[in-house]
Image 1 (cartoon, rainbow over the protein chains, first blue to last red):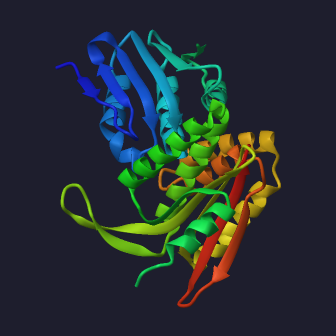
Image 2: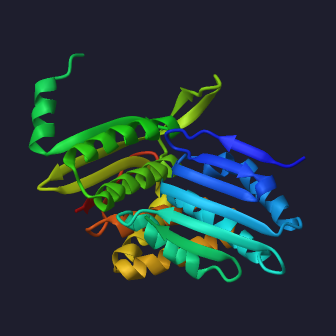
Length: 126
Length: 186
């Protein structure tokens, strides 16, 4: 059974989409819910298991306009986990999508990019 | 008791205050006040970086209150359970396109020293040092999953502020202290 998940966005949580068959995950919107760990629990649980499987390509489009520091911590955690599992035939692409005037998100993308060694992290500035 | 609204109104006006919130702080509440705050920032037509900074300081201050407020109140959740929410106060004001953001809450005496030291340390760092420190801290907290990330929120506030973080600790009774923090943006 391939995993599929779609969560509509709310005032403090983003739109989330996971399509395991296509090796694709997308976050879009804002993330500043008080309890982000709980909110992302099913996503992080799935990701942890998925990264151990024999996939060849996985793409993560991250198009968040704003997120709080607890989300930043959780995102970096996910990215580091992806990075650890990338390589050896597993291609992982992360697109950090934002706009030029969104300084906070651009800076954060640059900082996260520096931490990545194996996956392909692209800053997509529109 | 009928409060003298006119004197409140005059005081708010005189101090250039745009928004005051005092009461329970919980997730939907942060969303609600945050929405009002966003509307206000849109109305002022500030560049995205300034309005994002104000919003970010607001969110992290709210999280700080959630984490440290020693003043709690029972509150019904959406699934009909009763849980304790933290109470605090938040003020946004502006003068000449500079915002000031102030928050306050009651906290336990034992957390005062730690909070004060953290702020004092942040106030010695410039913007690029804060960026570096944030990155170090986010990595070390990731290595320690038990941490609730309180340090990170304060660093975020320091990064977005145009000023140093100003603060007061006023001792109350019963092992409690009133903590207030003040920053400007713009």
